[in-house]
Length: 489
Image 1 (cartoon, rainbow, N blue to C red):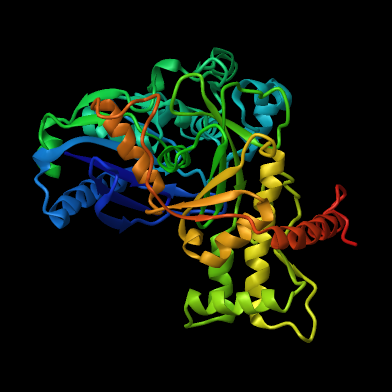
Image 2 (cartoon, rainbow, N blue to C red):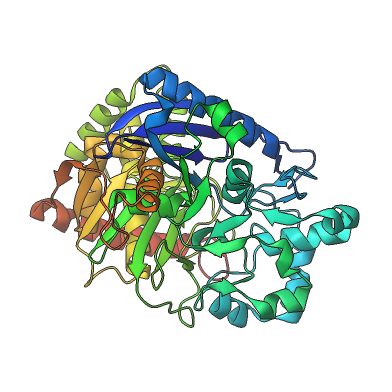
């Protein structure tokens, strides 16, 4: 039997077929664009999400040569926060407002007048920010009142696909965590926030746990995709939470998605949202569990930028080789990879990308080495802010950056953690496949499987000592470049 995972990202949809041992059998990908009618506006056509889901799901079965009757379940790994108003037939009434859309700045200020930053964070685990869903809903109500009134539901991307597959409006707790109208400690929609801002609860999807059985695929949809009408649809999760599940997040083990951005996940059995507000909180895929998520806005994307700028037409193998040569020369060049603005936990408001320590002996390989080390230093900063040291000794690293043996070794030495790289980088889709298997009764919710490991990297004592000194220097210079007054020294 097989599980079909739908991975609905920001700019594309991928369908992946997994067998019962979580081996990737086949995958199919289609891209879609972002709609940017004005500055700060970023929208998407939700119907395109659906049409490409159908196309990729059908195509992946054909590519694998697998009968749709052998697909026991479908689940979804999805971008979060994005919101679309739909009618009772799940037809969109307006373009989806992407998580990248930050038009609702006025609504953020409105929220601040009703509930304090501290109270909102303690209640929801999130900062008041225009990227989240509540400001977007307030914008819709104020600027598109007829659409707000007509909407039967306000759905996030995963919810929308489940609605199309089953006709039911449900979401999971990890997706709900990105709305800032979700009570994170009690795992429910926040009546206080909804009452403060006039959000009708009947327009919100029902809350379910990831891996719950929503029902079977609608007959007409089963015919479109080519699966059996008995195929189960499982509640999925936000993509980083799916990825953490697939990679094997547990006590003592954290997960790191080293893709375009980097996301670091840590498991908790208590939501301590009354404390540090630098790192956001989310419900996880099981009741009574939460995660903190640290984000570096640009990670592997910095290396790609470097390739296009200094290594045009050359491969990542060349970059790795020249970076290794720079390490042998003990290059002192430092990189602060803020190429897309501030990242957690420090969130320096005026931060930009910066290379520090260039001299006449600097070669392009030094820049490559500095990028890899700079991202590794930022990961360590996140680990420290997330209270990893003393309770965690193992990181599972996946995503495009994990394909670099050199980068993995640097991260192991900078963080002092054992690093494991799984056999497939498609951890989010694997997490969705696990949730499908849980809904079908094939896997245990308490002890789910994870992707088999491919490679392990251990810290090297001599390299750790070198990086300990370099890390202290890195942090000292960073504080001078972006101090609390944003004053450049």
